[in-house]
Amino acid sequence: MRPIVKFGAPLVAAVLALSACGGTTGGSSDAGGSSSSGGGKNCDLQIGFFGALTGDAANLGQNIKNGAKLAIDQYNAKNASCQVKLKEFDTQGDPAQASSLAQKAVDDKTVIGLVGPAFSGESKAADPKFNEAGLVAITPSATNPALADNGWKTFFRVLGNDASQGPAAAKYIQSVLSAKKVVVVDDASEYGKGLADIVKKTLGSSVVATDTVQQKQTDFSPTVTKIRSAGADAVFYGGYYAEAGLLKKQMSDAGLKTTLVVGDGVKDEGFITAAGEKAADGTVMTCPCLPPDKAGGSFYADYKKAYNAEPATYGAEGFDAAKILLDGIAAGKTARADMVSFVKSYDQPGVTKQLKFDDKGEPSEITVWAYKVEAGKIVPDQEIK
Image (cartoon, rainbow, N blue to C red):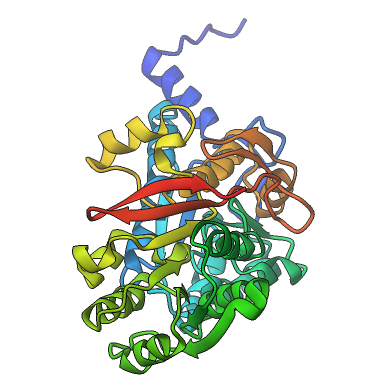
């Protein structure tokens, strides 16, 4: 008869902890994980944030990262024995940097999915590599419609694209502002030009002049002259907040009272800083993003508690994108291919909307809101139906 061996509590706890973290599973994957049966977990997984954390449009990327980090922190608080990390890929909003960083994300097998890319230009540069590697990328902010037409199996976005935002902006210009003469300006970026072209096409004969500027440009006097000469009632600008703020300041300095309407890339406090509070007042901003205080659950309060600030543009969408990936990890989808399949079939309520995707990776629910700058603050104006 063999002797009875008694295991002490510390040893039992260690065995249980090892089991919980997948240490006893026999499977492996391209993400370094266990099988996707849902029974095992991999405790060496990361979710990547892919977007600008420095550079001229860094505020928008920081907002997304904060939302994603909040979701991860909440997950980790409930899964102390099996933590998920956030890995940052700072593109500076530069497509050229995005391309090389995409390869780094692909090569890190602990990265199971990405929140991003944040912008359309970097999406165009990076997403082909993610698709080839089978690494899922859920963007909370890249809105160029063409991104969904490339046949990428790993591309998803949680907000409406510019095929919705552009016509909504045009409708606001015509119906709310009653503008008869509109000048359309873009910054030549993948996002800015794409959105401006849709607005221009929708407005038709109401567009009396167009202009193109460049990112990092600081002198907009030729554009201001063109706006004045056209006798414009409204100006639509497609681009990001750094240049838009300077344009609005120079319009104001020139005595122009023309209403400036901008897209979601300008919806940031950085616009008010660049323009000055007085000049920025009255600017209209469109965004296929939900006002943060209308987000579901306790997101608004949780964000304020975590960061001592109100959630800004794309923060709630960043939270939703990360939550989808975290739900996949919780379900045991620790192989990249399995995570792609999980996201493709995902259908759960998020804080911004019901999160469900069509066969191109587009969201099933779309809303576009107009915001206004009032007394130095960006406030919701109305949903554009």
